[in-house]
Length: 388
Image (cartoon, rainbow, N blue to C red; front, side, top):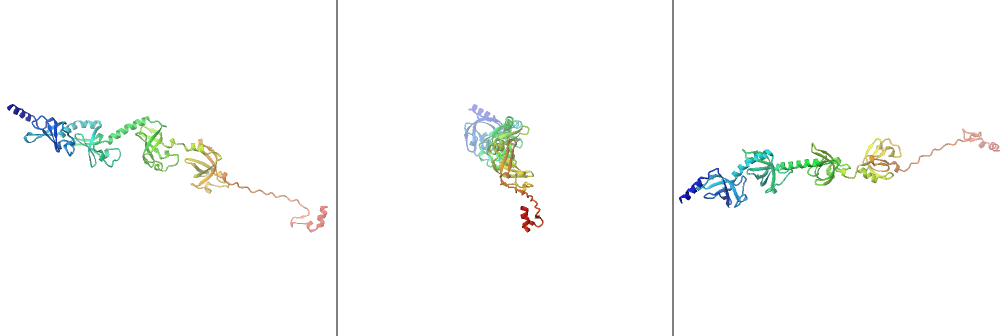
């Protein structure tokens, strides 16, 4: 009996505040857990000492049978041990986090809570992910993120203030940069790829061609004139693009949609032939003639001499921009992107007035040219003599 008491006293005296001990969870209650640490009574792990984060119940983190490392933080009544799990976790965390911060190592953590302004994770210390650093796009509702595992980088660390700021966005941007570099290095000028329209701007459309965005300038969207990309494109559209230029130094890619489509002059060569009558719209007027659009991106020239059968000084005397006209095709040179047209060929032919030549009358000695009366009219006898 004395020997057992002596052993118990030695065991009691062997546990002091600050000691690190290992124990097995034997009971989980709402606000605490009991651990067998080889002491005369179970050690008490209060809910406030389970985690650095707020818990609704101990069972959210601890289950019966768990082996835990804990720290003795005080002795309760009858020398009962009060232990802390979060103290051990915190010490371990501050031993490794600075190195991870310096190296930029990517870590994985489960979102423990969604709070105002961002997300919270338990790294042994409270880690906070601001809303702006969760994704590389705007997120309106973070409720689905609770319980989700995220890859993270430490972007700010201060042990004195117990501050640990994390970013999932930084990981995504690094991955995107690596992917972009790989795509850029493999791209070939002239290559045709399928892409997805990501963004529309006044000057063009950004198209994702496999993890990297390239710009389709508004002038490269279609062969016909496009005032704004939204006239023909929407975000999410699948499109075919041709690589025009790859700028590795600046990470920029120039793309073309129209280069993957049949060119207007290829179409013109098939559909427009000399001698045909075509309809078009006057697009531009110049001093030497009028340019008429026959197909999107295809214009023919009506030379000023071919506008009208009547002589004109300027095309503006007869035509105006936007006017619909008919013309006859005189010549097609698709390889030179030239078509000659004539409007006057379709006008009715104007007959030129015939020139009347005056016949010279024979001079009759019997004619009084001044009066237009002949002597024969006055003296019929003289005419009779003349005839004889």
